[in-house]
Length: 85
Figure 1 (cartoon, rainbow, N blue to C red):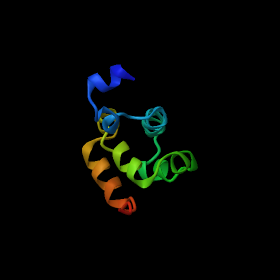
Figure 2: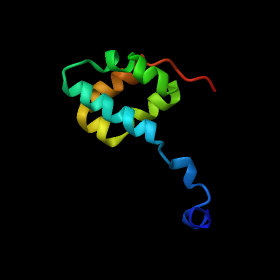
Figure 3: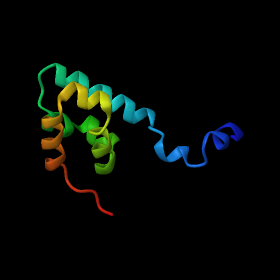
Figure 4: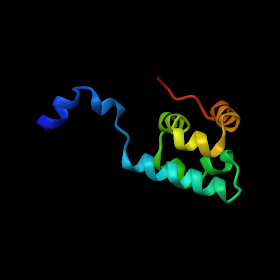
């Protein structure tokens, strides 16, 4: 507890959850198998684990961008529903 406060009182804002890590790995793996990003993002696995806001954050992850490419990420962001709030 004290250690996390010393590191930064707002570090929790930038922490990524392990379920986001797993979904990112899933997206990269499925894309490598030849599936389209829109199809992968529509999977129940992704939909059941990430909110629309988390899906947008997923598309900003360096490993996902590197695997899929900037143009594909931009297109997927346009196709995602906008998060409320």
